[in-house]
Structures are given as structure tokens and as C-alpha cells.
Length: 282
Image (spheres, helix red, strand yellow):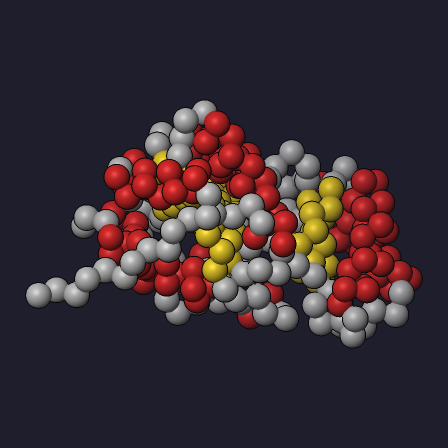
């Protein structure tokens, strides 16, 4: 006798239960979309050291052939997410799509290529002015500037002596700097990202749902930047497309409070994706 699949947790909301039921009933018409940092990969002090949880690729590779589409939707450059995730050349992930920079960039496993428009000129201007601004904003040792392929710049405060105080102190001056160059500031878990307006995970997710004609959507995230994707799923629900919202971790109360299922972190969320794959026909 074969082993029985692990039981799946019950979503906290009726809409979530409908979303999970639709995914189980029509997996070949479903889209599974997941964030990277904090969702497939643990949050680490140095973002360049982030790597997908060891179970992430096996779980996605087991799930992908059983559902209509799988996508990774991240604020990172697409090529960086592919490299840190270990997604290239994996059996089962031949049709994986990685939407980087909130959907501005796109990597397709089929071609192995990244497609993207020209960067916003304000990003380069902000990058040049940031060091001087940070030097005069306060005695915040340990700040980390992350350049995101010329499409965004992020200031991480996680390694500062007082991460939250540094985060709060920098919000206003960084917002002014961003506004001068036609950018916006996207706050996250001890990170402030300066990037072009008009592009977010909700826009990218809704566009990809239309592209693949998904009839059910699962979205998993962990941070404030995922709220727009949550809103996109809520809108799809109102239009008759069932959706399931997953949250990795409880640090961002605003996100966890809107999720249908909340997990302790990437390890638990990846485990759920693996369990879900076991429940679907091959």
C-alpha cells in the first residue's frame, strides 16, 4: 500500500476554502504564484546570501507538472532570483516563469532568457545621491545599499544597531529623494526600496493570470510588497475566479491578517506546497 498524502490545513476564510477546493478540483487550470525572499527563502542579514529553502525547488518541481502554471514573482532582478533559487535546468520546472522587479523583467525557463524594457533614469540618479544622503541622515552604521540591476535601489536597515529606528528615520528623506527623481519608496521588512511607480506585484499577477487564463489562483508572500498581489486576488475573487492567499511568517501583521493560511516561515510554506503536489494527479 502507498503512503497517504499529508492532510492539508483548512483555510481560515470561506473564500480561501473555495480557492483551495477549486485548485484541487481543476489543478490544470490553476496558477501557483509565489514570492521569493521570506517565502521560498529565509530572510537573512545580507540579501546577497539569500538562497531558496532546500525543499523549495523539489516542491515546485513536483507541483509544476500538476498545475496549469507556476510563477515566482519577486522584487529582485529575475536573473538573481533564478540564480539564488536554483531554478534553471530543473526537471519539472521546464515551463517556470520568474517575474522580476515586480513584473518588469521576465525569465522563461523555456528560453533561459530575461526580457525587460530600458531602466528608469531616476534609478541611476538616486543611486548616485544615496551615499551622501545616508551619511547625513544619522549615525546609522550597518546600512546596506542593494542595487537591483539598475531598476531599483534598496536600503536595508536590518544590520544597523537599531534596525527599526534607522528604518523610521530614513523613510521621509528617502521618500523626498525618490520623489525628486520620479520614483516611489516601497517599505518592507527592514528595507526601503526606491523604484519606479506604476509597477507592483498586483499589476504583474493580474496580467499573468490573464495571459495563462487561470481559473484558480494561489498566491504566497510575506511582506508589505505582497499586499498588492493580495488585492489582485481579492479582485479576481469578486470576478468569480477563486483564490487562495498564503502568508509566510507572522512578522507583517497586515499581511498575515488577510491571509487564508499562515505558515511559520519558508520551511512550513514549502512543506505545504509539497503536500499539495501529493494531492494532485500526476
